[in-house]
Image (cartoon, rainbow, N blue to C red; front, side):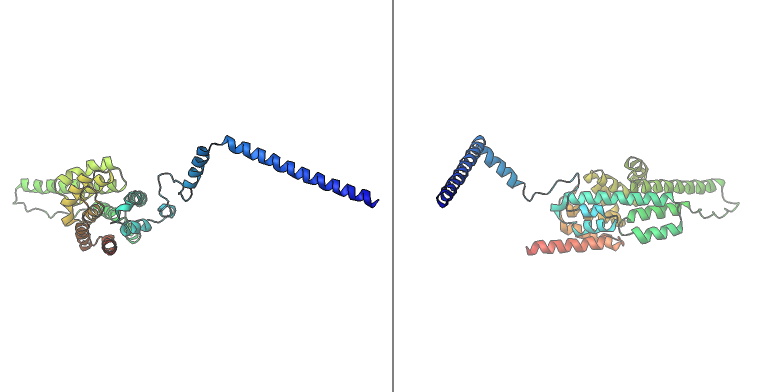
Length: 298
């Protein structure tokens, strides 16, 4: 019995080893055949493609991932802070343009809401408190509309001895002032809601006549349309008397839009805008000086 049991164990061990070897041979054959069907060049090419994709950022539709958090949050001031912080950084020109357009879109939406709700002193106070930093031109347009709605002071009665023609001239002059006021109101409002075709019609006449506010609006319109050289010309005319135009010139020089990039001149116009009390100019100046100092150190 012991002899038979020993024979059976040896036979079982032999069969197990045989099956193991057959399995190894079979697997080797399959792997060799599979690799033979894949050319070395194809294998390396696919491997290279896979490796090249490691660390790549997933594309986002019309939006850089670096600024996506700014677009995801609902406030306007972070957009303005980003524009001021990187105003002198040419490597971020694409991101700056996207952020600027988004800020303009949000400011326009706010302007439309405030102007739809009715013009009032209370509305102006709230508008100033909430949006003077990021949308100063919108606030100015709202204030201009409010002033235009207020009744004009009554003219003093002319003495009977004065010729009637003088009285008619006074009324004609007053009517002309009212017409210009309404046209400027349309100029400001249409510019802020980005109705550029209407804004160009409303602003061009007063701008040609030397009205500084209209010239500043023309600069903003042309800049938004990408006509930077025209924007530069209008801003240069208005900047000595307009904080908004001076600020726009600072941005254009800082980024090289419509003019050769010149950070010293950009700083000059930012300082001019600060002198007019422009809400964003001081921060833009500080960021530009810091960026320039950092670049010089590097």
